[in-house]
Amino acid sequence: MLVELVVNKKIHKIDVEPQEFLLDSLRRLGYLSVKRGCETSSCGLCNVIVDEKPVLSCSMLTVRCNNTMITTIEGIQEEVLILGEYLAKEGADQCGFCSPGLLMTVIAMKKELKNPTIEEIEKYLNSTLCRCTGYKGQLRGIEKYLKEVTC
Amino acid sequence: MLEIKEYVTPSSLEEAYKLLISNRNNYILGGCAFLKCCNMKINKGIDLKNLDLNYIKEDEKYIYIGGDTSLRDIEISTISYLKELGNGISNILGVPFRRTARIGGSVFSKYGFSDIIPILIVLEAEINLYKHGVLAIDDFLLLNPMKDILIEIRIPKKNKIYFYENIRKSSTDFPILCAGMSRDENNLILSVGARPGVAMGFKNLKEDILNNRSLVDEILGEIKFSSNIRATKEYRKEMCKVLIERLIKKVGINYDWK
Image (cartoon, rainbow over all chains, first blue to last red; front, side, top):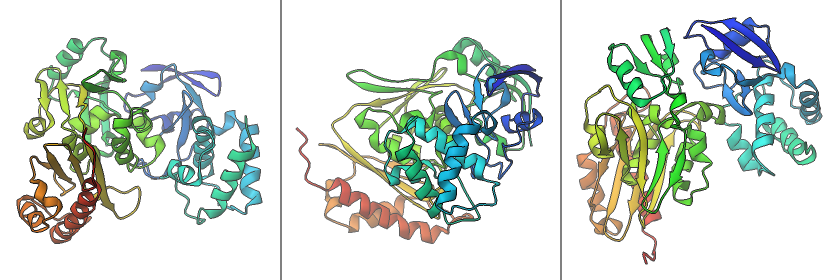
């Protein structure tokens, strides 16, 4: 099937099988920030933003994304760099493999929740897994980022 | 491995139903969140996205939730009566997953591990199916697997309180056991899910249960528990006492029904 994907404001017309998932299509198109993790909807590594909402690209059929606005890290470099600095300042070192999924979820949370409490942040980030750290550094960085960065 | 021969987006329920019954391997896609974990060959994957079934609305008697509504939309609904349902839903994996998963897929599939079905039982929800019409959720759960389309879930607005409890090994895992309880002036309802079979409901419980714990043992005798990879039958039975105790404490408070 021919579908039209709008990824980071760039239009791509690609031929996909009906069972192809967005994760595979995006990586095929060269958006390699989108990582393949558990592929059982559990880890959040493949999170992207579709029509301003976070979704698991490993669970979303590409054909369903026809004419939707998809955002990956490649499309929001400046915003992500700022968030990355907040994480680095709190020593939230990671191997980096899960970072794209975490960052996309935080960016989506910033748009959806106004002044979230730490409990709300934790709940929103449930199922966004990191196997390197204990999450505390990330949580401190994210909390500060959400408080201090307004737009 | 999942295989879908053809992806279709019907423009009416009638068209969707005709497509559904035209081949035994045609399926309604729902959110596809669990479909991908299955080894299935689908002839036609039917997406309901053009049928405007993504809504939560209310009138004086009911709250109506369209079958294509995402779990996340229900979770963040501002309708106060749905708050505990939203709390139950928030246990299901993460926000991105709940954004993708649809209530219709979750309920129609009658998953044993469902966090939602036990809550809908105590809310006395009704399921509106395209072919079978409107059924009480208890009757719907008794039906054999069938080809139909879940149009919407109707939650009657009643002057009742309801609560949900569950046990999981980790916060995003499937529940080992879950239970719901509701109470109004005349009726006390209990539901137990993840037994691991599909949830069971117990209506018209005696109010005495709030003060007489031996009645809990009577109910436990009626619930069928089994073992699976997550827990043994015996463990579930013991934990069920704990969940019921917690729920009794919550609904047992003095409450002004007027």
